[in-house]
Length: 524
Image (cartoon, rainbow, N blue to C red; front, side, top):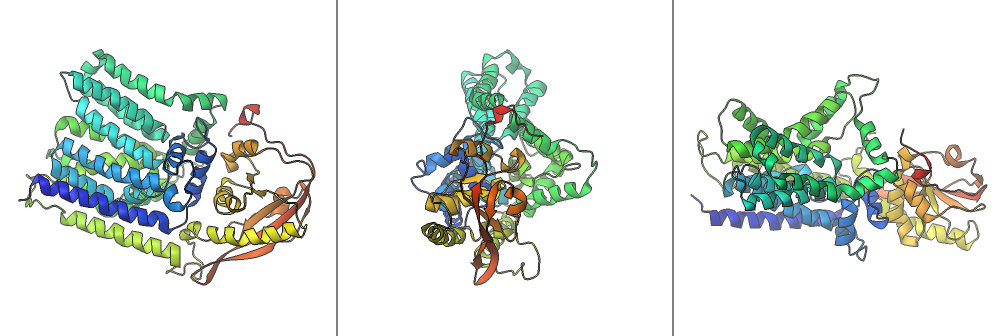
C-alpha cells in the first residue's frame, strides 16, 4: 500500500509533465480562429465584449506583459498556467470530497480530458480562466456550505467563494449555473444559510465583480446577452435530432470516451444507492454539474450548439468518477496510483493529441486530396500568408499601384482577426471588417477605434480559396476600381493547401463612417 507522500509526488510529476507538454503544444502550432479573435479583447480592452466578458483579454495582457511578448507560446501562456493550476484544484476538490487518492484520480481524469487538457489548458480561450475560477469556487463551496454550525471559517470561505464565482462569471456567462447550483443546495439541504449575512454577501460580491459587464451591456443595448439568447432560442425549424446527436458525440469526444464511460458507471452506481461519496459533497457536485449539461443538451434538440459549452459541468462529474475509482468498498478494489482505466484514458488523449498536432503541422492524412474537409487547416498557413503578403504590398506601394498605409478589409470577424495578428501586425497595417454586426462582432468597435476611412482611400482585400467571398459583390459599389488579384500559394509539407487572392480596391467613393452600437444598431 502506498502512502500519501507517494500520492503527492505523483501529483507533482503530473503537474510538471502536463505543463511541459501543454507548453510544447502552445508553441508548436499556429493560433486558431477563436484564439486570434480573443487577442482583440486584449489589444482593444473594454469593460466587456460582444461575445464574452473581459477576463480572457485581461489574462492575455497579463501573461504577455501587454504584448511585450507576442509569440504563440506567450499568447497561450495564460492557458498553460491556468491549466496547471486547474489540475491542482481538481486534486484539492477530490481530496476535500474524500481523500488524497480521490484527488489524484480527479487530476488524472482532468488531464485525460480533451476539454481540460487542450481547450481550457492549452488554447487561449475564455474557458481557461473560467475553469480555474469554477474549481476554486467549487472547492470553497464544499468547504463552507455543508457546515450546519456556520463557523466563522465557513462564513469567510463563502465570501471568498463569491469573489471567485464572480471571476468565473466574467470569464464566461454560463458560470451562472455554478451560482445557481449553490443556491439550490442551500434551498434544499441547509436553509440555515438564509439567516447568515455572509450568504447574501456571497451574491453581493458576485454582483459587484460582474457590474462592469452589466454597465457595458447597458451602454450597448444588451447586445451581448441578446447574441447569446439568439444562439439558444428555439426556432421555427422545430425538433432537430441531428443537432442533439452532434452535441452528444462532441461531449463524448471532448471529455474523453473512457472518462465518459467511467462517469456514467459511477452515476449508475449512485442511482442504485451504492453510496461512495459523503451526501453533502455529492449534492453540491451534482447540482453544480448536471443542470448545466441537461440545459444545453435540451437546447441541442432544436438548435446547433457547441459541445464545449457543457465542459465545466463535467468537472464535478469527474470528481464523482474519481471517488468511484478510489472507493475501497468496490468489488476487487486494489489501490493503484494510476488505475488501468485512467491509463487507457491517458494513452488515448496522448495518441489523439499527437496525431492531431502532426496533422496540423505536416498533414499526415491527405484529406484535401480525398476532397474531405480538413479542420486542421484552420491553424495552417497564416504565418506564411503574412510573410508572403508583406513584400507584395511593399512592391505595389513602391510602384504607386496602391496608396501607402492602405488598410486590409474583410467581411467577417474571422479571417479579420487572423489577418490582424499574422498579416497586419507584421507590417503595421490596420484591418477592418465591413459587414453586419452579426458577422463582424467586436470589429464593430475596432473599426470605430481605428477611425473612419476617407473618401479616395485604397484598401486590400484578401480572399481565401477555401473561404471565398467575391469582393465585387461585397464592396464593388464602394470603390471606383477593384483590380484582378495576385495569388499567393500557402503550403504544408510541400502541398498547396490554400490560395490567397490579394485584390487592390482603389478609390473609396465616399467617406466610410463607423458608428458606435449606441447609435441604434442591434442584434437581430
